[in-house]
Amino acid sequence: MSFDLQLQPPGPEAQAVALKELRETEENVKEGIAALKKYLEEDKTLYFKTDDDFLLIFLRPCKYYPKSAYELMKRVADFKEKNANIFDNLMPEDEKTAILNTRMVNVLTNRDHKGRRVLMLNIGKTWDPSQISTDQMLRVLYLIHDLAILEPETQIFGAVVIMDFDGLAMKQVMGFTPSFSMKLLGFIQESMPLRLKEVHIVKQPFIFNMVWQMFKPFVKEKLKKRLFFHGSKMSSLHAHIPPSHLPKDYGGDLPTINYGSADWYPTLVKYEDKIREWNTYGYRKKQ
Image (tube, rainbow, N blue to C red):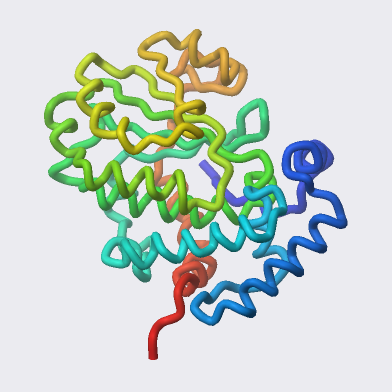
């Protein structure tokens, strides 16, 4: 199974969405980039690259409001500093075992009907907390995000997450902690320069309520509106993503998933230079 990033400029459909949803006009792009560069030049505490394509990573999810993009960059820096023990200088090699030996995190090779990337999290029976910690789970997700934000069409269309809790038992429930839920939600709600459009919870058993009670206090209104709980009713999921764009595992028309994170690990390695570069961004190190 061959995975690769789609780094080509946005096509006509993506351009239309960018104009309608993100205010991406020639004037807004030009003014947004110039203003964001100025914010970064004046802030001696932050270090981020300032070439035009890189700044679009932050301007697009903020609809070309430069102050908002600058604030997002500060939140990214805050998150990296606060969680330096987990993410500092993180490289694919560091989590090679977690990626190659589990099927916990997966990325569909196809986009959905709205052009969005689809990330799969299998955190039911396929996850053994004694083998893979929640911090490792976060690290793998962080590495995937490092690549996803490089794709212009993903910057525009955004991403969807399907969280599969099939076979969830007390072993997995005990693996979740309030600390993990705060870190995960802090990342996706505040510090991820990516448009997270929907999160779908599927195949969750009754015991899932124990996990949800841990996360619920930290879920903000914006994310609440994008969270959908389906249980085993795949027809409920199909109201958001049609069967034509889902594998048989989720009642879809596409073949059963026959690949896992081991198949896209080479893509992480291929773009190690980009990941290494991302590791340098954030607050400047005190001399």
